[in-house]
Length: 101
Image (cartoon, rainbow, N blue to C red):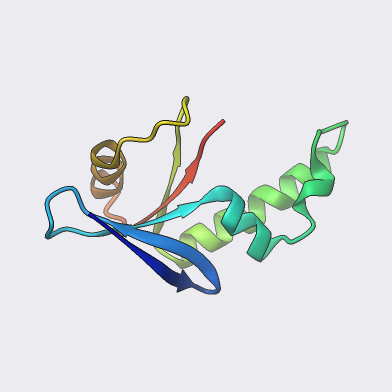
């Protein structure tokens, strides 16, 4: 089940549920970056921009902490809602930021 068109601090998210009862807010990393670091594209491709990379990570980590989120990195573009919800539950989080290749 999916519910769309919600926002956390101006960042769009979708509510997902694997069982119709427990819900998790799913934020895609690109949506997050466009809101909290609008010019993040200038950091890619990375060419010895270590300081900029560290600043980007600090901003993301701050948002994740503030919003009780779990950071989930998928090795493929196909993301399992059940797997994401399980990872969030283990971390006692109600929001997941997903990064895919």
